[in-house]
Amino acid sequence: MELSNRVLNRTLLARQHLLRRSELTAAQLCDHLVGLQAQDVAPPFIGMWSRIADFDPAGVSSGLADRSLVRITLMRATIHLVTAADALRIAPHIQPELEKIPFRKGFNYGAMVGLDPEEVRARGEKVLGTQPMSAAQLRECAAREYPDRPPATVTQAWIYQLPVLQTPPRGLWKNNSRPVWSRIEPWLGAPLDHTYPVEELILRYLRAFGPATTMDVQTWSRLLGIKNTLAGLGDRVRTYTDECGRTLYDAAEAELADPDLPAPVRLLGWYDNALLSHQDRSRIIPGGAPAPLRHLAAQISPVLVDGYLAGIYKMSTDRTAARLRIVPGRTWTAGETAEVEAEAYALLRFQEPELNPKVEILTPGADLTS
Image (cartoon, rainbow, N blue to C red; front, top):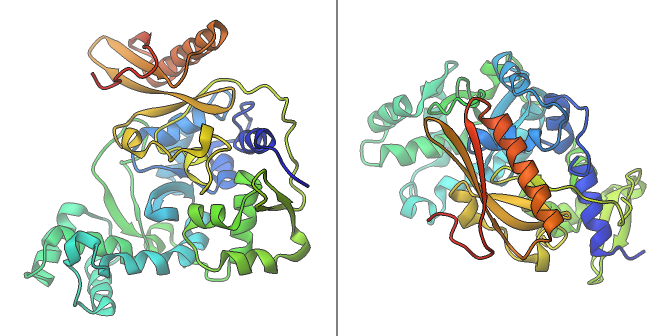
């Protein structure tokens, strides 16, 4: 059965809870989405606001405080907000690839090349021990352990090599404190779960992002052997084809969305996984253009109109006002413009309720940074 791009778009939006805000809790949404990307503090909160009805950010803060939620390096070597259970069971699958990163020639100009990875990890485990440490403290220890290497590079290597997470207060609502790192097991008081099947992880991806090709799954996870894993799932998956004739895999019980469903305007956080978790992103980015990583790195965020990336926005604040400036990616209709403006004001009321909200929609192609 061939699936149109429109079916894939509406199915992705439905599974991402972007067609209609859900009644899930923050932890339940993290579980369903297999985490929310969280290099910066604000994006997972914006991501949840766009997906959960009457979202209360205190739920995330309390989850981080009681350790039922954690911020940890996982898929694509990026920080994700996940449940404690996922931290313990996904890390063993991701960690082997993370550990290779520091010893590649392209990592900080080869600063770690020539060192024994096992020895570096052993020293890192001893340094970090069972108590959280700031990056500054880790750099001091790195300078003592490896005086001939850049301490920041050694610290970064340890963070890749050891299953670690970021502890609060960083990640609490509007708390952008510098990271403090802890090994996973002492922080959560439980061992890593090496029994969790990779097949379950892939099925969860399909339920949140599918139907998807093998390369889509690999783009999301950076795991190897995806083709064999999917083949081994047997009747737990079904297959379709896309408009280009590629094979799409999906969880057998998962439903496809009606392509005629309306898609409301959504303002996502920068680095939202809905835009980054497929090799072919044409189901959400018109023409399948690369994700606008340069914009995302500058905290410029995506605007979805009729389910597709159709503009970008950025928020800023001063003492009295919260401003949200928007650049359309195409000419919007009057109705689309009004819907974007309404959603923008709603986001400002959520993000900065005590400040005077101001929304400005610029012309297509305008410079959002000027």
